[in-house]
Amino acid sequence: MSLADELAERGEIGGRTVRITEGGTVECHVYPLGPLAPGMVRVRTELSVISPGTEMTYVGRAATNPYLHKTWDPEHRVFSGGAPTQDYPIVFGYRAAGSIVASGDADLPPGARVFGKWRHTEFTTLSRADARAQLLPSELSFEDGADLAQMLPIAVNAVAYAEERHVGTPTVVFGCGPVGLILAQVARATGATTVYAVDRIPQRLAIAKSLGLVPLDAAEDVARKLKGEYGADGVPVAFECSGSTRALNEAIRVVRRRGTVVAVGFYQGEAAGLFLGDEFHHNGVEIRSGQIGNLHPRWEIGPLRAFGIDLVRRKAVVLGALPRLSLPVEQAATAFDALARPGEVLQVALSYADA
Image (cartoon, rainbow, N blue to C red):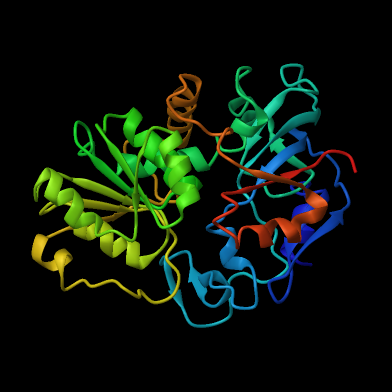
């Protein structure tokens, strides 16, 4: 039995579900609904949003995700050669919101709105404890809710790895994808004086400007520009959110001596364009991984999510209003293809309205 079939049997996926099949192709497959286990509630998904970073590493014949090519040893936390840890079909996703449709708990009635990090699937289950913790605040939309469980926490956690060195100073964010745009807003809301948003795509720079960020074209020498304006020691922290090792190199160049670069992107393959003998070596730059899989010691997931939700409720961070192409889940293959046009499409949401 495949992992996807096991998930369906446990009720974690059901109905119309996106899966990535052998060869990296994307399809919408219908799984039967398993029985609702005691202590669980069933949720019908309103929308889920594709991650244009992690998920795309599973798609296509040249899929680069290391789990598809190496063995992950969870005890020693190391990859090695051998049988792939993950195999197709893959069901994935972590940006979703929906409504409870079945519950044995009076405090969680049908119709209650919840958010979560479940897969691209029409039906899922949550424990009652998780459902209570993930009730969607009444003033927030499903579009906001899709990013409360994972995407916003990614940004809050990454900013924590700056150790507040961004407070009262200019800060630079490389990559104006969804993570970069959200993180830039969190950095500003937590004390950065000016947040520069760097990208090569004019449409994304325009979105950054609309959010009150200062856009910079990646074709410029950003380090020379900002060090010319603020001096060699003007920028203590930069965040790299694109997953490009060339951008990581530029983030290293822009920070001050003994500055900090928080690496947020998912870097695939060998590190092209990364020159560690240059500014990294001469300026003693620190690179910190800000991945959500490794929470900053100051945070636990519940308080971290609550902090992020408060930023959204205070309108310090925009989530659901960021541009999204919306397509029915039956058009999942078209949705993933659209993300190959970053000049036109920032992100894609899948709708689960009745066909």
